[in-house]
Image (cartoon, rainbow, N blue to C red):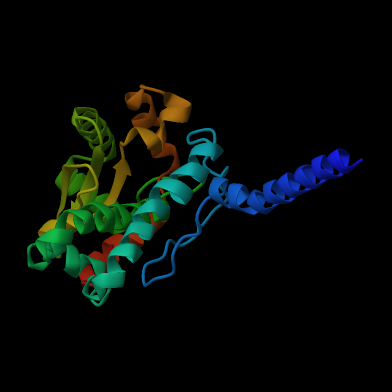
Length: 244
């Protein structure tokens, strides 16, 4: 009987120890909460499935909630010991990266560039797409040869991006438009420019639906371009008030 009692005691002790470990296992498996800080990612201005069938709902969950959020989380971690990166607007910080300590310069370039690019990206899409009108349409015709030529040149530029990067239409203070590409998470803001709009050609932006068919993604993307928001951005750029 004494032997049985000892066995029961050992088993009970082991069971309690295992139970005590359960919360740690669950917490380790759960996503870590994003640290608080001066940077934040705004929620999408539309449901995740709103851009289907052109961009699938799962991508529109993973892309902002994991990829974009990672940039924001990293920025907040950097800001803990380097609060100066949050004391000026992002366009100003990105335009003066050389003034940052070398130890954080690359991390700020990558993560703040990614945060700025994606903040713009979610804004310039919507269900239903549309067509450019008014001043922005006139500028596209004047500087980029019209909408069809822009779409053709934009798609070709996107295909030329090696690996990961972005295709942008930039806008100067006088309203002049230009087409350019950037690698990784680099932004026109780094050269003191403003992006009127742009498309993310990192594979995480399209791979679940399009796999390696970047050309198909670039073509389909025009169906969800928010020309009303782009017109607002164009007016703001000419007024000198456009941020990211």
